[in-house]
Image 1: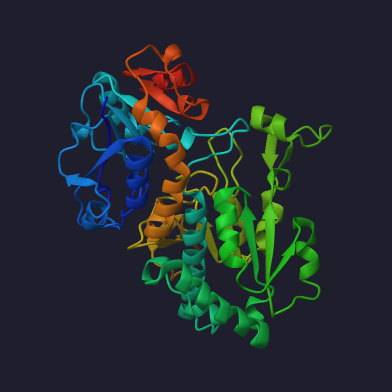
Image 2 (image 1 turned 30 degrees about the horizontal axis):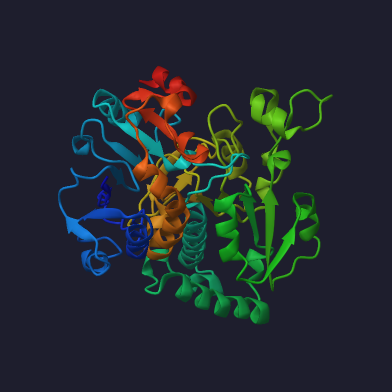
Length: 433
């Protein structure tokens, strides 16, 4: 039997140049597993049509003959074909309103949907992800925004030289080289007194946070615990940046004073907890929001909190909202942004926003598609993590009932739709349809 996978081109916006599977891996699938591939033509993809053709992969417009179609981002409604299998980030599992028409169309056509976001191990850790690269690009863009903010206020600092991720031609290599130089400058000459102590907080400690920390750690860093923040102000160093990681027990406490913090209880019953993050926010210079959030959890920072602090000159200058839940954990993240217009300023006194990094308030970096700013490296890493699962997906018989569907458990648990019907784990999405 012939097995053919398709790679759909990405066209959500001009910045989206990533691929789910790189040319070398398609060649490997053919040689080791006898899986053919067809790649849809694209003028902007980070790996050119020719690079795919050079590995013996067919490049054409039509993917109708493919058994399974792989993509990165959401697929336009008019692309789906009856009874086909699709694997991509669908952004439907939280019941996202804007993607319900797409999901409904897939159901009407009897399609099968595999969502990368739900490919996890037995502990719930994601196995196929771009998260590290969201963190890497998000940290660079946040440092850039902070540097531009300082420049606009006539504050000279080594950080002012940092560029936005998309403006580094050699991507990570060039970024790291420049940050190493800036780091030496900070160590030798120090930061301006007005910035000292410079404290960067990270909400969360998963793949996204680790990626962001990987960038910050190139600079001279001193890691402190949340409890040590106040002590730093007693004798701050201008020759380093202070890094602090906030875990769940630092962000919330039980509403009942008799109960201590229990992580599993917090996940199961978030309504029993309240935010305590406001005790740390006034002392932070930059906050990186890297946590998973839904509206059942307390917010990290509310509009009321920053409004009350606005008159007291909050030290917080920039928030890198990598998680980017609109009006979510950061209540005043009013919109997502793009690489072409990456930041806006929220004015707590007026409850208003303006694009750019100038004006009164807090700068928000809210790019909702950060890994596309590192398209080559992120595609290579993603393809490597997806590759082991591809032969089983392409060769599976999806015509059987769901219970009999023979797939690795990691993939079967990520099947949101099977032949147009929500699978048992995802029946709850019905209420959003």
